[in-house]
Length: 172
Image (cartoon, helix red, strand yellow):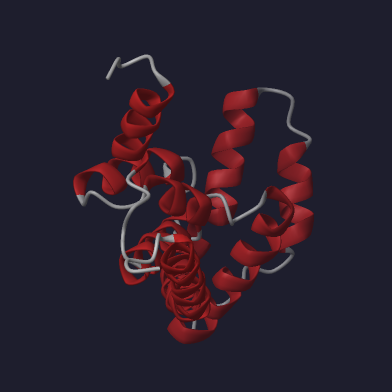
């Protein structure tokens, strides 16, 4: 079989993407991706997901799909909520006039000075952000696993049933 034939390409894609896992491993891969996608490691989500998918030989599509579930239009709400949960757990106060201070810092023209001002304003929220995000990503990962597993099991049963029905019957 030629590596450029349809079957050769499909075999290589199957090997690269690792899509032949069991439903439980696929649900785990999705849950791992969700955990990474909602973790506090903003900017490293995709590289971490790819690295762990290859390191643990997991379904790459499921991991990347989970990583990408933290969509840009929900990120601000999620991380603000996670940080609020972190401040509540740690008993940390939210800095007074936080929004006003952020608005004033954002007006600073010089980029380095703006970043320094934002770092000073947000520094008290670092540990609440990390703790809240870690708790949130673990909760969402467990939910992703238990919500996706029954669906994946049903899809596998249906595919196996269809494959069994289409197989030639001996003695017919």
